[in-house]
Image 1 (spheres, rainbow, N blue to C red):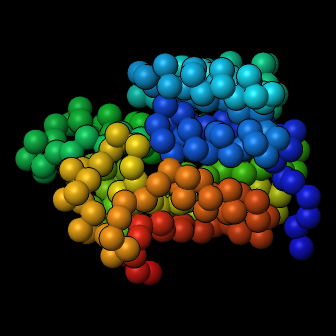
Image 2: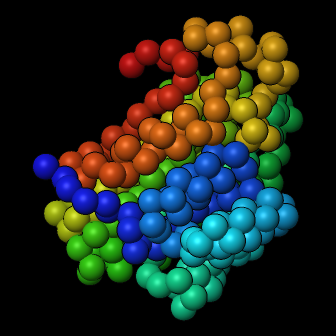
Length: 247
């Protein structure tokens, strides 16, 4: 049975820290005693405000910009974070692009950008951080996927494909590092408020959800923290979608 607090004095890197899910995860990890790097893309102000808030409350937090469309951004991000906070023990890849497009509208550039942010960047970040986790005998990696990976969703085929790719990445990595004390999982939410990625108006989307409402970032954080806390849980993709896709 797991005992103690696995997050205290650990270093967490959270991408997508300008959005609701990333911010909820960062708050929760800081409250649990982790030092947290909040990585943001084009929207610096929310991440910096949160970092300042967490530091004011006695936490250790740092806001760091990274253009995850660039292949070298992952290495640069880790190289900037680790000298200031320490080696990354927990990777939460929550950054995502969700531009809604039809099959006919999607250009090669659109497809490549979606996969670069949603799939390639999480892979490269895992590639950068996993060796250190294995060497230290502790690590947690969580990819934020989507129910669209199971259903195809309504954002677009490039989005669904990028999120489904995270599941394959999860399964490839998890079995290879489990013996080193590292867990690798994915969480697949759907229709979460305050993310900037809702594919429509909230009132219209609410009717799609069996529980009758949209999800909250804190509910995603609740499940994510429980998964990260459990050292026996690995190689899993867990849906959080209000009953939209029973599995």
